Amino acid sequence: MQRVNALLRPIPTWTVYVAGAAWAVWLFYLGLTGGLGADPVEALEHRYGKIALQLIVLGLAATPLCRFARLNLMKFRRAIGVTAFFFVLAHFLVWALLDVQTLSAVWADIVKRPYVTIGMAGFALLIPLALTSNDWSVRRLGAMAWRKLHWLTYPAAVLGALHYVWLVKGFQIEPLIYLTLILALLATRLPQARKRRRAMA
Amino acid sequence: MAHRWTNDLTPADVTPKEVWLNRRQIVAGLGVGIGAGAIAGPGLAYTPDPSLEPNTFEDITTYNNFYEFGTAKEDPAKNAHLLQTEPWSITVNGMVDNPGEYTVEDLIGGFDIEERIYRFRCVEAWSMVIPWNGVELADVLDRVGVQDGARYVAFETVVQPENMIGVRRRVLDFPYVEGLRLDEARHPLTMMATGIYGEPMPKQNGAPIRLVVPWKYGFKSIKSIVRITLTDEEPPTSWNKANAREYGFYSNVNPNVDHPRWSQATERRIGGGLFQRRQPTLMFNGYDEVASLYEGMDLTEFY
Image (cartoon, rainbow over all chains, first blue to last red; front, side, top):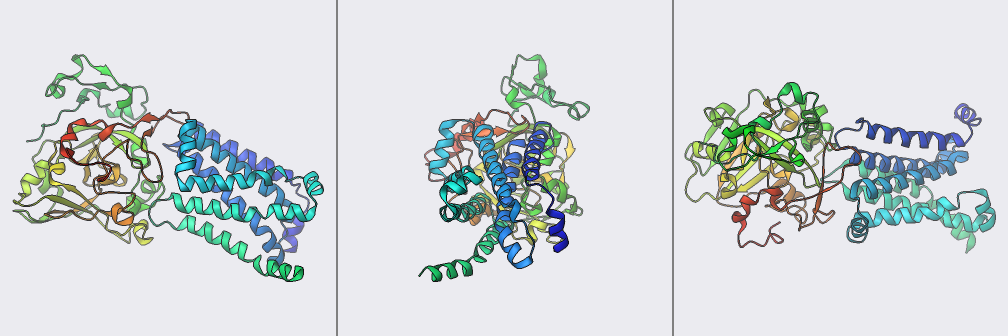
């Protein structure tokens, strides 16, 4: 693990943003040119959404990986989180502009369809997190308040996974795997949280 | 025998294989005059209707819902080659005069194979236009002899767990089953299809023989049929068993009755790329001639 950490250390964090942007643009290009199959709208919507979930899982895994496996991704955690937000945003835009297409129908879906509602709620929770993912905000809010605000990641991640579980037809394993992973990653934080609470009491 | 229903597109509108292999620009026409379409051909005045341009063979055979072979749209094209279609035996039982084991040939041999260009509307709010080859189900029913008192037809899809990854994963309670009321089954639009674009039915589309009911959501058009049962009770149907709130027995295409999780008012025509506009969904998928089957029924209650 020390060797992996040594390999990761010289990689600048901006590479995560560049790789994320290149990935998103590449998928869009594939959609334009027939590389995503017969229904590029559905394909792009689902690909962006799933990548967002994968990045959220990776971001949530950073702390446990560091604690239990001594794999140090902490330096990349902010970039992973912000990139995840951009994939959620891209997922939302493809859904709203290319799939549903009319504003009234977008609004109707958000209000009427529970799986869209919880997806939107998760997206809304991520907005303040993306806006405060910079050193200036950490200083401005103070470390403790900033940390508390960023605990919103946890409900947002659960909402994102539920959104996926809720949208599929029939009994499908894949969304349940994401939900289980996210719940397990949150569970690794419980002993810490309990300790904190005891310390405060 | 057959030809009771006339295509609103004529055989002349079916794209020859050489052309559809690299086609995109063919505009299909709307035939005019009941009974004249099949013989009249392109000489008759017709209104070009780009919305009825059939999808490409590639779209039709690479974008499928066939959960026995996986839940992603591209899964059936990847996995359905494992389906064993030879030999193929169809059990016909229940309230019929001639029950027994039928081959596809036993069931449809001697009937004219018609080409029919139908709209196909999936419950997921996408649609295609597909040139099917097949026979009317009514002819098949006459051949097996429907007894008095039979009111429904039940169908069952083959189960080959060793060849079907979706069956092993228990995505649904397999075998997949579907059903129609007898009058729906006898409607001249309802067909047993054995091909697409003049090619034998591809496995991912339900080889060797499948149902096609163009005014109902696609999942009613059950694939790879191994059992046909005539009965006097409404038969269970797979999606209704999985989620009765979302999928009813009738499942007629209806823009006014939403799926609980999404709107059915509009649909995305497959094949139009990333910036395709959605189009309004038509009542009964545009097949108004079936409306009389549901006279007096509340289609919100019987969705």
